[in-house]
Length: 96
Picture (cartoon, one colour):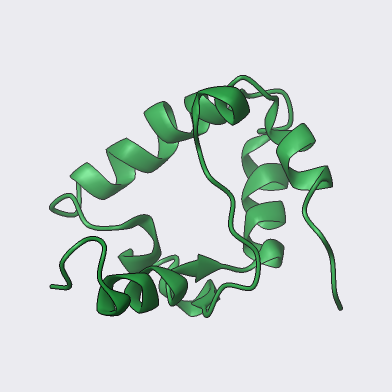
């Protein structure tokens, strides 16, 4: 496991990118449009990862096929966690 603040840790985090098509599929399937970002973390991400031994979301078997090197980073901080999920998604740069 890479130590936080190191180049190895930064590279490991970069490889945990989740593709936009997966995020949209999840959003449509679970109707997450009006959820706040913090609700996604609290009620979807944390329970999923805790049930798998507290791994990273990108390490879950169902998510892994949709992961790879990230080109855009979204940070779940206080200022972004108050947004509705759709507001977060529409601000992602899209490159087909």
